[in-house]
Length: 297
Image 1 (cartoon, rainbow, N blue to C red):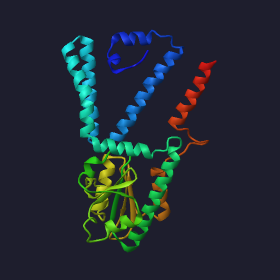
Image 2: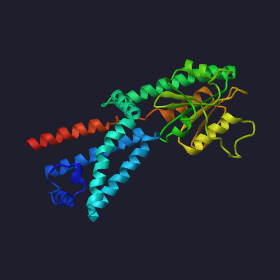
Image 3: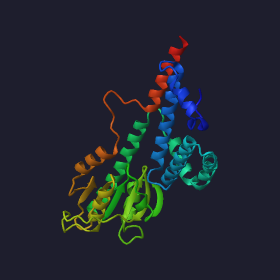
Image 4: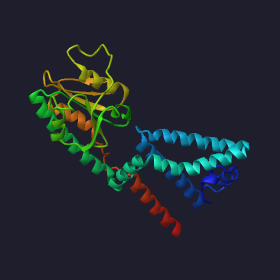
């Protein structure tokens, strides 16, 4: 019994699906098929989060829901129309969202399937060392800086206000951006997916009365973005050279090198479970291997 798009909306198909013996090989394969599809959808939503492509997914979900309800009620004309929209909408989406699709495929191509966490940990550690190099240089010379690292909550709204760079993170580049009286020094740098996405971006200013009066616009902007997202932001004060970090609506001020490095590593470097953590891909591979051997018996 195969699962295809027309079958998804067929009541007869689901009746047949649930009439299968739950201990049979075919039933397990069908369940695995559904889980893999849901996982792929989950990953696609993760890639689209914080981008305009997420609105596409919402629109597609509405069309699919309409198609399902139309088939259930018996509105055959509406059902046929939704089929055409879904079929040709895929082609239109590829044309409209070509840049997002290309970035997603490039990201997928860079992924190490059987040990992604180790590769990610190495990249994040290199990024933190670049931050440290820039912070040390700017703090000694009292060069003001504001850097926000995007995590799960998308910052697309604020990225659109900045000047696109799409550059690798390096201490030298960050220092150069915030040198006073240069075109990019005012505003925030936003880091997305391990790259400097934009510079000179505008962040929302916090209205909190708990922020000490001696802190200026950079600190208020850093607290503001921590109020609306889970981003981690570090600030270098141009008055004192002090280093501060905001996250989860908290402002941590006058941090030493050891303190801010510990916070950045805790928040940005993926943690490994004791005894090693299996990746999804490795787990699926081992489970399929085991089941295939069982089927041969």
